[in-house]
Every structure is written in C-alpha cells, then in structure tokens.
Image (cartoon, rainbow, N blue to C red; front, side, top):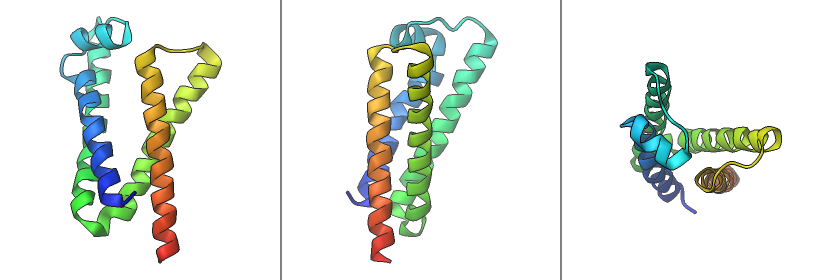
Length: 127
C-alpha cells in the first residue's frame, strides 16, 4: 500500500473514534462501550484522548500531502497503532475479553500497524 493512501485511511478511520470519545462522552460511551461517564474527571480524560487522536490524525493527513513528512508519519502511525494493540492484548490476557467494538478496534489497530511496518520496509528497501 502506498504511504499517502495508508495515512489518509488511518486518519479518516480515527476521527470518528476520537469524536465518539470526546464530543459527548456521557452519551456516546455508555452506548458504545457499556460504561457510564459520571464525573468531570472521566469527561476530562476522554476529551484528552480525543485531542491526542485528532492531533495524530491531523499529522497523518498533513503528511499524506507532504511527502517529506511521510516517513516520520508512518513511524508515528506504527507506534500509535502497535501501542494501542499491545495494551489491548495485555488487557485481554489480564482482564478477559472486551466487547465486540473493542475487539474490532484491536483488529483494525493490528492491521494498520502491520500495513505501516510493511510500507516502512518498502520505503527503506527503496532507499
């Protein structure tokens, strides 16, 4: 897969997740993840996660149109997705299976991490 397309797909896929975490966490998270957001601290954490996700998505979109940034953006994509997937796998081992939404996220994160690694190896081979 080429870097531009991969970065665009990752960014476009991450934006709705980010917004579902941070726009109205008190409404969206009980529906999506099955737990309530009851305090300012809960809302604060999920809005911070939204900001982190949106910042990464913005970088990936910028890099998609600026080839000089694509190598760095692919590394960020790989580390972001592999980090999330690793945390989820550790949680499955320690805590048990999450709901279907979170299992879908795990599969998507693994796929994007693998695609980023493959794209990086293709770029490094071409250099």
